[in-house]
Image (cartoon, rainbow, N blue to C red; front, top):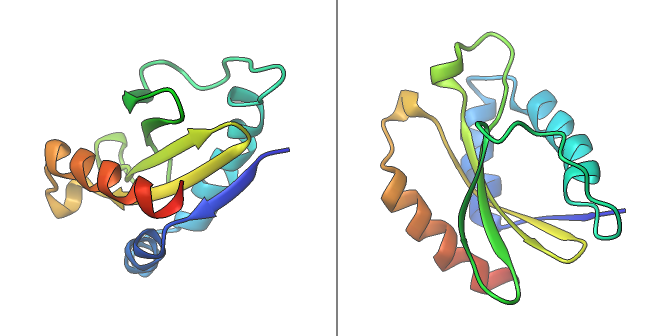
Length: 119
């Protein structure tokens, strides 16, 4: 069983998006997929490689980005979630939507900066 942790700034960003979109269902579905994809003893690929992107990694953790499926949005509008995996812990670091016109490089830097607050 995995432990899910959220950075406090992720919680604030997610709350803003939840006012506009049904983000909770997407996050719950994603957590169920993570239980299989990032299982520490027997991982199995259930998330398509086109949807899951490794941002960076070191010996302790890896940071990933995924397109979170949200009902009612077109695929190019799906929010992106940056999260870190360390053993049986998954930490949600930041979330953004292309509707808000974010920069991938900037969000990658934000995620790397926030990981030290958790791990």
